[in-house]
Length: 265
Ligand code: DGL
Image 1 (tube, rainbow, N blue to C red):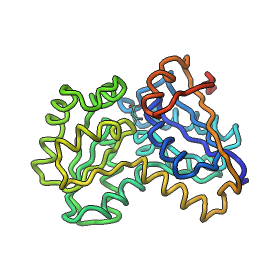
Image 2 (image 1 turned 180 degrees about the vertical axis):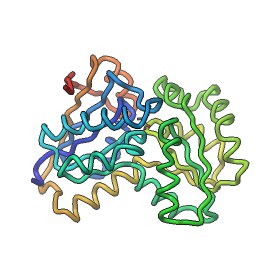
Image 3 (image 1 turned 45 degrees about the vertical axis):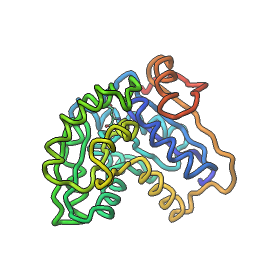
Image 4 (image 1 turned 30 degrees about the horizontal axis):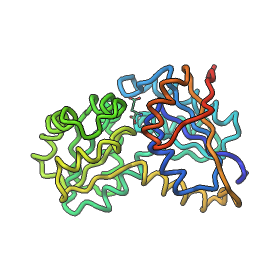
């Protein structure tokens, strides 16, 4: 079992931020990455639709022999993990629990901000996960839909991005948060603009980093770690690969090649 690949999925390119962390943390692993580019975005869709899409994505990865599933998409993680755990035998890791754990560890005051897509924030998944770990925490959330296209445009520290960030984060900063969870695959790219806005005192929690760490721990505990490298990545998308390759290269920091278009049905 340990020689098999880890299956990672996202609605599109965003999950490449998680993939990048996994590659750094677990260089010996084989990874299959699926971006559901034909149906992106997930963040504006209803929980039942996101659950259905997630089951189909996971089904594809399991057919390709996944030994574990990583739900890189925050939106899918916030609503679909229980359904995935019910349906599949392999361990499932989403980004919410690792991000929440990190936030609780870093926060001194217990005043924690969470930003994400409409579906993620509306689900309350981060708030619940934080409260399970620290019942007295105060969680303040904001939906930041424009961050996704801004990150894909590469406007990571553009004046427009800084203006949008100011608008979105003002209510959270008024609440004197000391920790901010970047609860969407795209937001780690905007760290320079966000850091400039929130200052050095507010801890930024990157769910991608924490998820890679949690995955490494889980593989070790379950003796699923691959004994020998080097590993590698295979990319699958549900629409034509061109845009994924172009935009994804910026997300991953290296060129994307050999991206295969697949059908999930
Ligand atoms: N990957 C999604 C997330 O992390 C953002 C893009 C989308 O809405 O599909 O929530």
